[in-house]
Image (cartoon, rainbow, N blue to C red; front, side, top):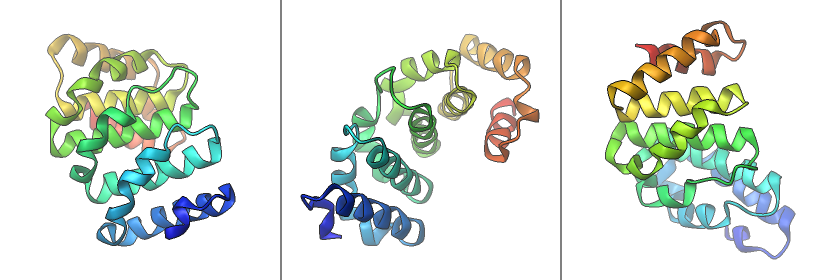
Length: 169
C-alpha cells in the first residue's frame, strides 16, 4: 500500500483500488491511509477520483465516523464534477450523517442544491443524505415532492430505489 505515493499514476490507482477492496473487508487495516485518499481526491484524473470515492464509500459504509474530520474536503464539489462522484459523495455524507448528523451541517446547502441536479443518482443520494441528517419541515416537503414527481420508486437501479424508499419513510 506504500504504492499510494508512487510517482507512477497507474501504480497509485492500483493502490487506491486495493485500499477500497481491503476497506470492504477490514477498515481498520487501511484506516492509516484514509487521509491520503482524501488528499488525492479532486485530482485531474477521473479514474483516480472514481476509485477514491469508491474506497471512501467503503469507509463510510463500515466506519462512517472515521470520515467526520474529512467532511470539508469532500464537499463542496465543483459543479463540473462527474455525476457519479457527486452521487457517491452524497451517499458518503448520508452514511456520516447516520452516525452524527451534525458532522455534515456545513454540507447541507450543497446537498439541497443537488436536489435540482440533472442526474437522478445525485438527486436521490442528496435527498437521502438530507433526510438522514434531519432537515426542517420545508426542506422535507421539497424532498418528498421531488421524489414523488420523478417516480424514483420505479427506477432501474435497486440501490437508488431503496434510498428513495428510505427517504420517504
